[in-house]
Amino acid sequence: MNPSRPPASTLRLLAGLLALGALLLACAPQSQGMERPAPGAAAPAPSGASAPSQAAPAPTEAARAPAAPETVKIGYLGTNMSNAGIFIANEKGYFREEGFAADLLPFDAGTRMVPALATNEIQVGAGSAGAGLFNTVHRGIHNKVVADKGSGPPGAGWQAMIVRKDLYDSGALTRLEDLRGKSFGIFAYDASQEVVLAHYLGLVGLTMNDISVVEVPVGDQPAAFANRTMDAAWAIEPSVAILVERGLAVRLLGSEERYPNQQTSTIMYSEQFANQRDAATRWMVAYLKGIRDYNDAFVAGRNREEIVGILEKVKVVTDRGLLDKFGLTGLNPNGYVHRGSLQEMHDFFVKKGTITQPVGLDELVDDSFVTAALGRIGIYDSPLYKDPGWLR
Image (cartoon, rainbow, N blue to C red; front, side, top):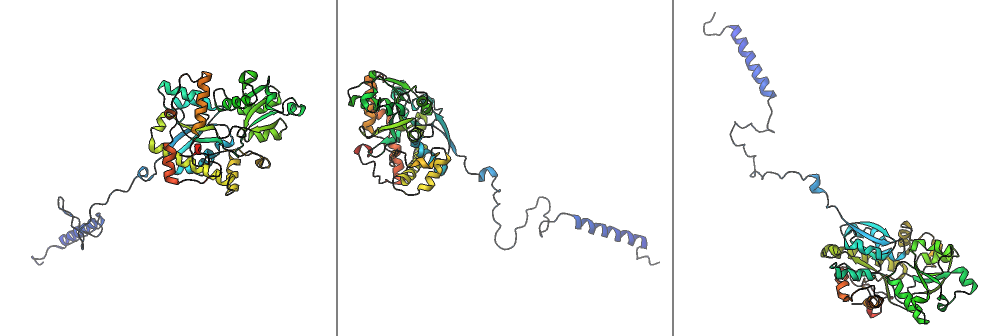
C-alpha cells in the first residue's frame, strides 16, 4: 500500500460528498443568469447602461376603471312630446358623455315637482314654473328656472283646447263663448294652463268664475272625456291627436293662436344642483343637444327616422299613423325661456293671491347655464324662435 495515497474507502466517500454538493447546487434557486449576491452584499448592476429605477407597480383595477357617472334625478311630466329633449339626450348618450346617469322619475303635474326640488329629492324638474316655485324664494329656497322645455311660438301648436265630441257635434260647444257653465280640465291649479285659460276667457268677456275648473292630470283625460265628467280641457301632444283619433274630443284651437310665445313648461334646477356650476352646465349641454336633434328632425326634416325611433322606444309615439297629425311642440334649441311670459304668469298669480309676495324675476330665472352651454356648442339658427323674448 502506498502510504501517500488515501484508502479507497476514503476516495469513495469524497466522491460521494462532491456529487451531493453538485446536486444541492443544481437545485438551489438562480437569479436570472446572475450570481447570487452574498448576504448583505449589493446586487450587481446589469451590464451595459446604468440600471433603471425600480418599476412602478401595475395599476389596480380600481385605478384603471373610469369614474362612475353622477346620478341626476330628473322629474318629468308623463310621456309627452315636450320631454323629447330629455328622452333623446338620454337615449343618444349625451348625458353619459357629460358624466351623468339620468334617473327619470314621472310626476302627474309640474307643480308637484316643486317640493321635491326644494328638498333636492330631484335635481332637475321638467314642468311648469307655477306659483309654488315663486313662493319658495320667500322661504329661503333658491331653486332656479334655467331653460325652456315647452313653449308656443307661432307655428307650434302642441297645446290645444279640446272639447267633448258629442258637445261639439250637437252644437253645444263650438265657440269660446259656449264655455260658460261648462267644466274645464287643467293639469294643476296655479300653473301655466290656468293663465292661458284666463286669457282666452277674457277674449270673449268671460272669467274663471263663469266656468267650473277641474284638476285632471294628463293620464286621466281619456277617462274624463269618455265618462263625460269633463266638457273641455287643455291637452298636449300626443294626447291631443290620440283623443281626437279615438272620437272622444275635437280640437277647437291651439293655445298659441291667440296667445303666442307662452312659456308653458320649463327646466328647473334644485338649489343644490344649481350651485354645482360645472355639473349643471354640462347637464345643460347634453339637454340642448337633445333639443337640437328634435328640431333637426321635426323642423328642419333631418334625421327624422332616427328620432322617431327613439320616441317610439320611450312610448311618446305609439302610432306612426298619428305622427303627422301632431301639432308641433315648441322646444327652443337655444334654450332660453321667455321672460315676458313668465312675468305675466307671476303677475296673474300675484293678483289671484297664490303668490303671496311679489318676486323679482332675476331671483328665480338664471340664464347663465344656457349661456355657458351655448359657449360650448354655439347658436342654432331656428325659424321658430325669432321673437326677441327668446333671445339674449
